[in-house]
Length: 364
Image 1: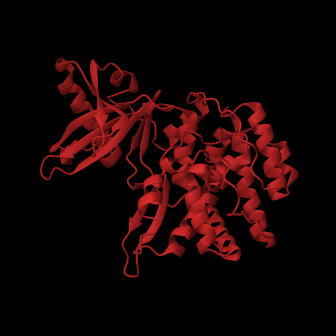
Image 2: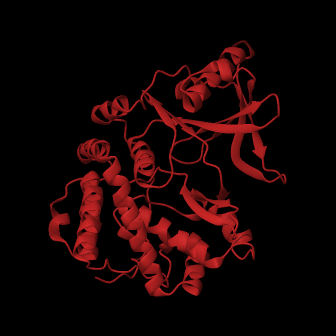
């Protein structure tokens, strides 16, 4: 099968898929579903808003919202309770010194999120969390990130409300423009993490990882900085039909990063790092085998994409992994499960996975 990216097609906005009963049972089992004092619907009842600019005065997609003065105190107290549930399982005794500084709203995107800025009154150190509309795709994306990536995530659901912690880091587009050629960063370490991130997205079918949908975390070390790339937008988990939309290397927005890899990694080295990440994914899966099985069972019966997307993707994956077992898959959850089987079979048989070329024309 050719790896040449297909011609771009007009994309329609992804529909929202409600959290199903089977997914809700999973969330209850692992204490993700909790009673929350603030819901998404309550935050939508703001009375006024003003546009928000960034640090240099440029307009952003966010607006700061305001509520009825009589409701503000109770709303802020309840938002602090939500933050306490995320951070310390609801223990407010260690959070009396916090206050809600600002509530922002963004109408752009599927989740139309609220961003809550909460500040420590002793040292003015801020933190953030988000309140969004509940959506099955996003919840599965968060859970797969928590289970199969090196990153742990705190989030909670309550009916049709989803609360997520803030994922800190340098946005990928800013990193590409300002940090990529920084002499303090070792190019091979950056390129290695790009390959590993690309593989994580592909195996667990996380789509739309354009540069502004992930962040780069730079950690100083005694021999130069270490790099970690983290997804921060999970709206397009297991929705797209085109296989290459699950590989960040193909997006036009990521072209600078993809070309950086080709300059600093040999093909054989890239394949080595790809295999290393596959092994790590399988090790993580083995540790939480029962939990992952329950989640994939729910995902396999949930509707997360149109039937034609599933058919298109299973045919592409069957060709990529050279396994006709994909053709029997009827859901996105089954395709994720089959991807995990494929990398296990490839490792057990020592047959290399087809290497992902890093020097191709971007998909968009």
